[in-house]
Length: 302
Image (cartoon, rainbow, N blue to C red; front, top):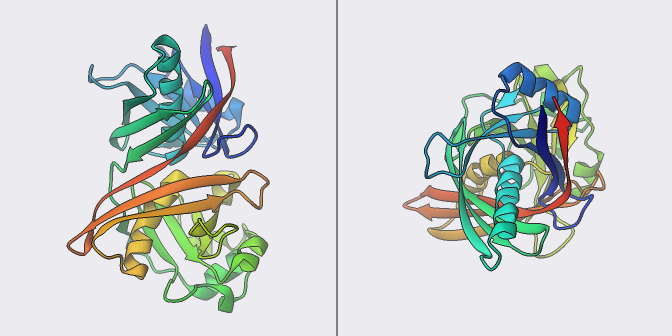
């Protein structure tokens, strides 16, 4: 059976930058095993399968797979799928540059605002379905340094320390001293489990420096035990980072906006926007967004 698919580069407005994503439509009749095999065939960090929404007022139900397993939530699949739905709606109803797309994911219902920029480019921003929360796991500085090929003295900056946070998917979040330290980080798979524990042990490494004064952090994401050497843009990690920023930077009441650059070292520059609303000393709401560009459409016969 022929099934439509699209390829988008997410968290970028230029083809061949950002994080590539496959989105497969016409997924009725596909079971979990078949979806996993198709995701392995695309061999991208994530592949999305679009199904009819269970609630008729929602836009779609989606399932997200890496080449190895299903994920309950991920940022660049959410942004990319919302952008694709928005672009297709724009073809059918030109003159409507802004819209709301509501996606049913395993983590819950995710509301996205979509803003069309051109025929193939749009911006999407989504409300976090779960607010970030700390996980009860200690990270040993020496072990973390060894797993990343760094010295212990290069781990941390200011008052930022390694922690584990989740906003639907857990990340080991590791601050490092500066851009040079971030650039030379190199995962050592033999030391990874001892430093970061059981799967999933995806690790998000960041520093306060960036390439541009209008950006707030630069980051890299490694998940070698899940078959992802490095990810060029990781929205779900930025969702978890919201809790880290609030914890260590002591955000004041009000709305705060941050821009995180990622993928620079891979030659796939990406920009992710994070918005955090703080009330009464806690995060009341947060949003993650970015651009995506449609670069290919076709069909697979499976």
